[in-house]
Length: 219
Ligand SMILES: NC(=O)c1ccc[n+]([C@@H]2O[C@H](COP(=O)([O-])OP(=O)(O)OC[C@H]3O[C@@H](n4cnc5c(N)ncnc54)[C@H](OP(=O)(O)O)[C@@H]3O)[C@@H](O)[C@H]2O)c1
Image (cartoon, rainbow, N blue to C red; front, side):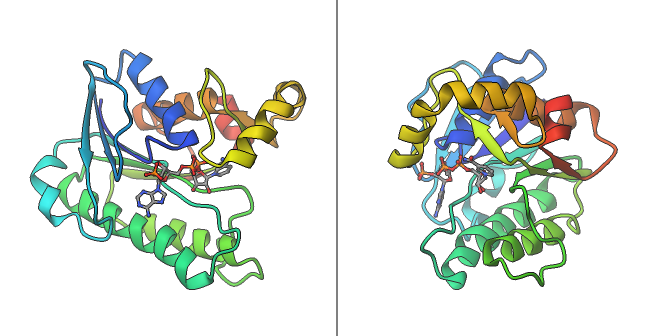
């Protein structure tokens, strides 16, 4: 598989990149980001891009791919709805619309979150925005699209959160998170399981388009 990865510098994206580089079914990875990953690997190429609402200048480099793993995303904490929608809905749809046009055989995997509101009508702002993003992604003419809704995610293999206080929490709570991963798969996954599951659905498909933590852990 030839894979495009968005958000490769983030916690989820670093996990996905690690699994892609290790997996023999993944032939090439193109990371598209606003900053470089700092990694070197024979399978990895990178594009550093500055306008995530317009990918037209990259079109010739974005065709011929089998899968996109979209791990770019922000926390809504302290953000207005307009700003959060811009960074969540507008950026995701700009990338996905371009990719769907150029890659009709592509499987698109979007990392959203547990509690996403498919009705788009609920009281939680982030959940409505993620719900609208999921719903509109599912309308695009991809071969298939899968919405991954993890709850808690434990970073493994030295992967770090970009948010300092999240990272401090992950380190302090590591034994508890390891235990939760074992006893509560509905509420926890790891960066490794998430990355493996993205590759798995891109390669083999999945019976449902929305996957919760339990689905992700079972792949
Ligand atoms: N972490 C969790 O526990 C968790 C749980 C459930 C769901 N999720 C979801 O998973 C997704 C990824 O989360 P994460 O924890 O990996 O986040 P993260 O560590 O903060 O990484 C975010 C990624 O998005 C990129 N990004 C953010 N704003 C951007 C912008 N304006 N333009 C271009 N790139 C931008 C970042 O690039 P830079 O490096 O350039 O900033 C980085 O690669 C999010 O949608 C989140 O809601 C996370």
